[in-house]
Image (cartoon, rainbow, N blue to C red; front, side):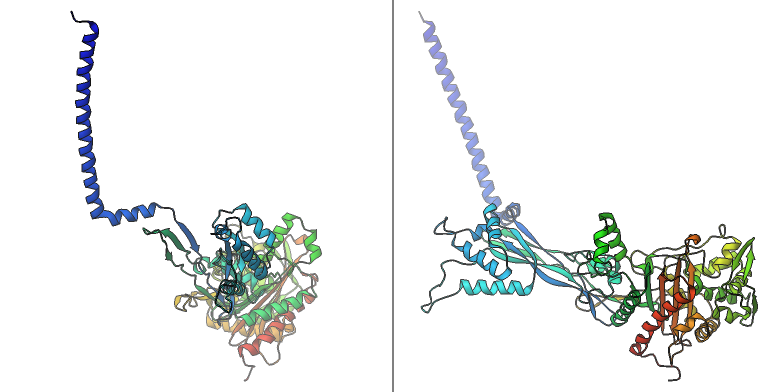
Length: 620
């Protein structure tokens, strides 16, 4: 009789045999698969090994270093450098190398020599360097100092080489340690060698010379900027460090229309003027009337682009200390902005020349027209006065004596659409498109808003607003034969090798008046300076100077604040130079005193520039 235990034993035996067979089959299949996979990998590596190796290397850790571009230079029209990017260096510490000693991990022999060399050459605090090393002993990259000069870098590398290679008479190393774990990365620092010269024209760049702010630096930032390069470091298949470098693309050079000597004269004369006068703003624009290129442009606000936040060139220490943080920010903004393009005011009597030009163009007056000044006009129930009762005047004499009555009589004969069209043609009340940031628009009336009173006041430069550059560009057209050119501050762009990238030729936008009328105005404005008017203060012995003074009352009228100006050009019969001076809210509000001041400032500038530009005296 079979027992239950014998039956169970036979069942287990059969199960073990079955499991062994299953395991043997599974093992065989797995071995076959692994063998096939191995063969596949062998053939795959043989055929594609190099490709896969590259992919693996690409997936490994690597380091990259930015190679900064050099920002392009800014020069004057003759090539004098106004701004450039100077090569400077960032000092990098590698604590893992400085602190490493192959013989004794605790000795750290390279540390003392390296720290001492850094202290000796650069004047760094040795304790501070040691603190940095102790805080990050395993680091391989610490930017320790920036904006180091080439001289400093060279001095350190010289000391390092001499120390590490020093030998005694027997040719044995003098030092058991080395200066190691220090290297330098190149960067650039924006430098302005002429310091405050043309500061509001060229603007400034950040410390790393990568982006411009204000002026040419901002407007032409895309041309001045380049593209950073990169240096990649990676481990090759032999365990060696290799590098791949993509070089940077440097920025272009911007050649401005500014003449550095003209600019320096303008700034010097403004400084002399403001030393004995109180004012809100002072601006001067010097242009070539035949191309509308700006030769000089300056305001009383001044700063050094090398240290743009320094306000000491414009404000006293006492005034700076008295300002709140908000006031300091606003003061810096006012210091950086360019009054000659960013502020629009009623230009005043300089615009009487435009009224005469429009009257002649529209044939509502002729050079022989006669007028009677009885001290003012009644317009729509409003009395608008003249500075004096001039009596009988010819058209030209209306300019000599700056007679409001004559101008209102001319304007009354014109239609509102024609007045506004000529103002637009002359570029008044709209941006000129000068290649500088921050240009204001100004304001002129529309047909719907211009009243009879507005027509009258517009005739002598009140009621609308324009910037200095708008008025100066319009005057260029007024005296050069009637040709309105786009005002410019940059002549051309060249690459770092001097190759031409872009050239800006004088751009004729439109013809605004005829040569005949332009000639009449040149003569009339010359006679204005030669007459006994306030413009006479701008006369220069031996030269034919044309010019016009201006006094505009600012709004609101009850504040009794004024803007005074002087427009002058020379030679009057063939203009080669135009100067526009504007003084905003002078201390002395009397018309005669104010106009004398602007005329003297213009005369002081022009007297210096005429010999420099080689403009001959009359009759020579």
